[in-house]
Length: 290
Length: 290
Image (cartoon, rainbow over all chains, first blue to last red):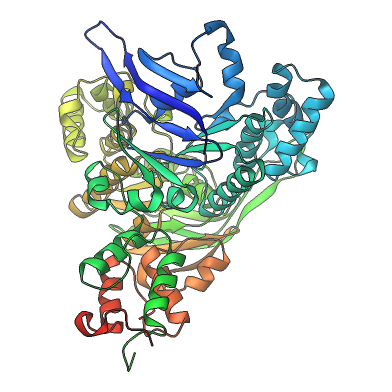
């Protein structure tokens, strides 16, 4: 796998040189590979947002580098705009950023800024609307007439339409109900599979990360605490809980069964995996009479 | 008569230029006793938030009626009393803070009630202590974490000495640590001050801790009962696109495969205990499949 985005000794200090100086990102070295789905977790104040805002040049590192395909994104500060097209960012509550007269115009805004023709921009926008399942009858409506979930998806489509090589999503499912959350996550997953691009998803929900991410980056106190394949990270439940993070309930239960001596793996991340594991081991309930 | 009584409550939002009047509640009957802890579940658009606003007279029913301590919420002469007795906390902590200093924010409510300064001082201190934020009384509100802000919003309500607090997804925008802080606060207020709690949530682990769970769907009450009664109905909840705790779901799935798991599992401990009964003893049963 080829690296697409790398950070080297990435450090960011808010208000440096003042009494309020705060190191929010402390010598972080992360490599994102082409086509991978990386989950990022960490409690509030752990440095997640500061990290991702440096990845597309919204914040300039105090120290260290961000390399996009091996090239320092700040090598030519005047070209930083181009980086923001290649590394697309969906902020928290992106629906607050909708502003155009119609949904379609709003989705077209990004690709048009990239310099695409009206035709090309529309083509991209239609494709993006398809990915987030935004029905055609909504396209000519004002974004403000849409429901909460539809607004969210329209705002995400606006970033997808720029066709970024790396897509960063900060808590895309926050505030949605379980159904809306499942739907949005599977759309992101589908988009990731179809486009083969790199996705970085920030979430407070371990359950969501467990379901979609190939690898997980754990941030704590501005530092990188863990970076590994998803099951390996969640197998370190006690450490995660000390950082104020909660394991999926089913993972905790399977880990406890393992501790009690049952021959389960103990790193099952979803109810499906746990059922599979238990029924493979014990068939129809193990003991006679049960 | 119960403390809060909703009888045949209907509600329709006013028609707009593009949309005719839309009825979102179609005859809801709900009684809430003093000191109860009720969780209200349902997916977005089911009418939960409308119900929350009806309970403290922010909205008035378009059919049926709601009484709080016998006073009709739609009667203008009772409105002040109703809002004093039932406080409302919303999802976004940033939208609910009005002052830049913590104690000033908490004092805002009682000041508006025309309470004398000495009494305000006492209430503010008490309220801040009850949400465990007393040391922060002179801090700037904008520098607090989400969980802390939400606790300040709750303190602001407590300082008005309501009998009931209605919370509309108070933890939706918080990280796991913030969620726990807020949930602990709500439980303490319910237990120690006897404040009636109506908690609207998408988090099943929060609903499990309630005394009673009410499930809404499409503007009506689908079912209600103790958490154990409600969460044993896994198929009904799933059919309505609602989550169940992972422990309940694991037990349910295994039962479907023929395992002798009880049908009213609510939490991790119960699920582990039931699995231990079902599974062969550890020493004899290692890896044994039937």
